[in-house]
Image 1 (cartoon, rainbow, N blue to C red):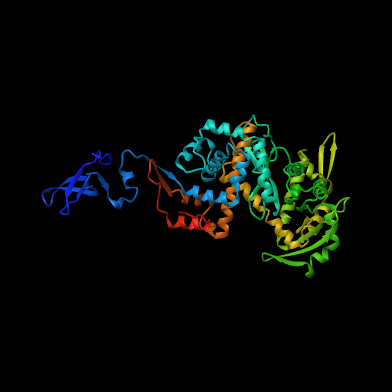
Image 2: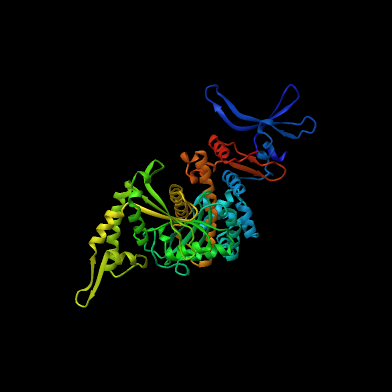
Amino acid sequence: MDPMLEGKKLNYQHHKNGTTYVYEVLDRYWDKDKKQPRTKQICIGKLDPETGAFIPSKRFGEHGAAAMSTEITAKTVVTGPYLLLERINEEIGLATCLRKASPDHWREILALSWYVLASGQALSHADIWLSQHESPTDQILSSQRISELLADINEDVRQTFFKVWGKKLSAHDYLCYDITSVSSYAEQNEFVRYGYNRDGESLPQINLAMVYGQKRFLPVTYRELPGSVTDVKTLENLIDQFDKLAFSKLQLVLDRGFYSKANVDLLADAGHHFVIAVPTHLRFIREQIDRYRDEIDGPDGLRRIDGEAIYCKTILYPWGDQRRRCYLQIYFTPQRMVDDRVRFDEFILQLEEELLENRPVDEHEEQYRQYFTVKETPKRGRKVSRNSQAIVDARKKYIGFSALLTTKLKDPIEALTVYREKDVVEKCFDDLKNELDMKRLRVHTSQRMKGRTFIQFIAMIQLAQIRKTMRETGLVKQYTAKRLLMELESLTTIEYTGRYKNKRSEMTKAQREIFQAFNVMLD
């Protein structure tokens, strides 16, 4: 008997044209109405008139024989996410850069990044997901193998990738720079310290400094920092890292947490372009506000940005001994006055609490001197008094004002637009900690932590490109990035052994629309 027919209940029916048809009996039952036995059967093929060999029915298609054969094995894998992510990598050249950095392990790194991107779960569960999904690797990535791989993603691998990838992105883009904290339960990680936790948690933490391209919305590089390092102190290390990676001259966008005279000196002397927010409590800023107040807050200063009225003025402001050409952009926003006044009052209370509890913050020294008087007495201990007149003057004269210091951008609205768009890096951090499973750091040694973070970073690059395309095509109105990948989970491929071609399942309308938006070309 033909192996395809073994184990099946069959009926053979001879047609008058001489053909013998083969039916598979699906069920036999008693028909109560007709009082006779009945058979439910389906025609599955016919016999060759010359050889007597079984020929499967054409309605089963080209895979009919494979589906019926007990000698042919097949497995079903999820293909949808693979098709999309493969296209993403082709578009941005990520896999090429990764291959240059890690010729031996780039496929496994990319596969794990796909797992993180699609599931957001711990790496220890990756083997199950990878066995069910088409991916760049056919290696079995057990927990032990993943631990070894994390250790293999060493400093040379990471820095080579940053150099190749960063050169590709940094030449024609504004680079936004910011820091976030990631809490950790690890005790054997040299990067974990207690410090200011930006999520308000009491766990020890590491800091991640991230650089993001503003125009292409793609992460460029990152750096792990001890949790106790403040924003102001990190910029010199970042510039040093960029120099070692041979990046071109930078165009950095920095919030006021990074402002210090030393940092601006560093950027100006190195010839980098920058847009940096400057705190308005600084004396030189207030002098310029006082000098140009009537020009700023008047008809000549009125401009609009995204429908919002804003008053502004550009002041040529050469910086430092080298007299680097800079522009001081002063802004006055009437709509912000109420919120700014509340924030100012809360800040005054924060400063007072820091002084009363004798836990001063270095970056607040100037404000302590400006708004408070502190006396130490043997009997009463520490006494903190407010400088009420200085506080009142600040509330009346400087609330609602803000300032940017720029090099390349002379127009105040263009400079403000570039600065406001830096929130792409904040969204990047939200992705890192929420969608990509980095809210808690679960690895316990610094080397594996670095490998784990690198895989998250690779996933983040692809997530950023997915979201960029979703915004450009309007898919963002229908899906989140994770929901979009879930929509593709039902697209599968049956993979047969032997000579039979693989068979992909029928696409849904939603899947066709997604692939069309991402320019995924299917056979």
